[in-house]
Image (cartoon, rainbow, N blue to C red; front, side):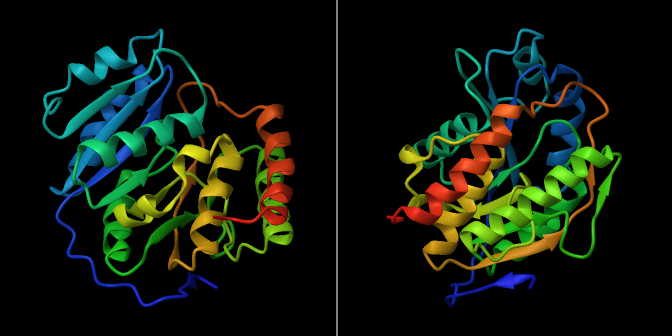
Length: 249
């Protein structure tokens, strides 16, 4: 199923949205990525959440022409993981801005900026829009077979354990309505990597929110180093059982 709607969602006349891009040593990518994001739609801005990258990522961001207008930055003192970076970005947005929709997006061009308008179209009618690599077959380019098997298996495992009815619960290209983030217990979400994505989706599903999956093309990064680790994989394997066994509030 491509659509998991469990409530009637009021139409959203979207005026402004923000793409949250966590970074750690992405200086070679952000200078090209952020302008590409902004050119997709005039309603879009970007919030870079940088974990004190030693390669000068923050300096690259601050040197872009749109910095201070449509490009914002949240600088954190140290690297604390993907999940913590997103939570910090979400909380900052909710406390300091009036953006009506909030994206998650990787900094390494594995997520195509050209897909952003399709997310904007669907968030008008849904609480959460997920970019799926496995909605219509497998739409992944340049991944080693071992990594692909791991990802497909992780999604099957998460769906089996939790009952979460989505094809790609571990993907990191998605769009939340502001009202969706306001419903979630952001201060209690401490997971990272795969686990973070599953947990956020699970909280939305258990609250009966409308979730829409749309197909995306995922291309493995060509610059930089993947942040995947054995710890992240193990955390996801354990966390899905914790989700199933505990009461979601």
